[in-house]
Length: 154
Length: 134
Image 1 (cartoon, each protein chain N blue to C red):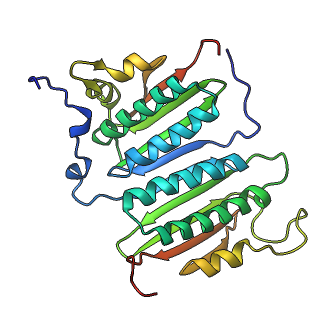
Image 2 (image 1 turned 30 degrees about the vertical axis):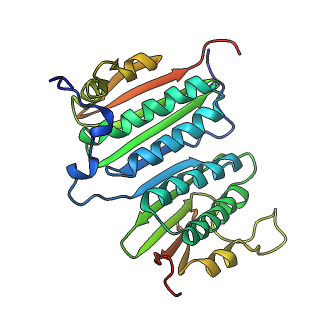
């Protein structure tokens, strides 16, 4: 390698530049069905990078898919565009994921006949769940998942 | 060619704290959006390579410790708006993306590349498209 000021791409150590790297991710997407797949791919990349155990990855994917699908199906009236925002906050002992929208808030919508399985499923999978309606409109589902080591008893 | 606005005009953005997650997440998002924009495989690969370079170089030039990218997909087009970057960060990011023996990869692959100053910050705009016929 010559004395060029430029460096080969693979030699960059980004963690060395930031002594306490924050690894938070915020993704904002139009609330449309095809973007649920984008969220799942991002979760996959996140989980691989964090070396999360397979069981936790599946839990994350299932819960976040349900939360995002709720936003796509119920948050906004038909034909009215809106966004879904996913925040991923990994910590040493847990992963916190928040799925938020600016839609019509939590409640029954005209296109459903009653409460679905989504939220009970998330509640069963996550270690904790916090459901909020924002005062100005919208909803926010915060899920926390413990980072269990593979093989560790539940 | 002007692209019709999508049915939904909510933004597509990603904000990733500068660190080890920038590369893996940015390349996944860019890959998905490039595929949805119906870019052919070689241009999709170009888009992911550009994403990798941005992910590797942008953390040194961002303003607030996060790599922020806004996307504007269109028919066979994908535009990225990277920033806010510190003053001079846009040009510096492009210069940093030069690979010895290859040259500046972003400049070679992008159909449009420019820096947009906005007050005390600036943004790097990158557009990839496919103008050929299938």
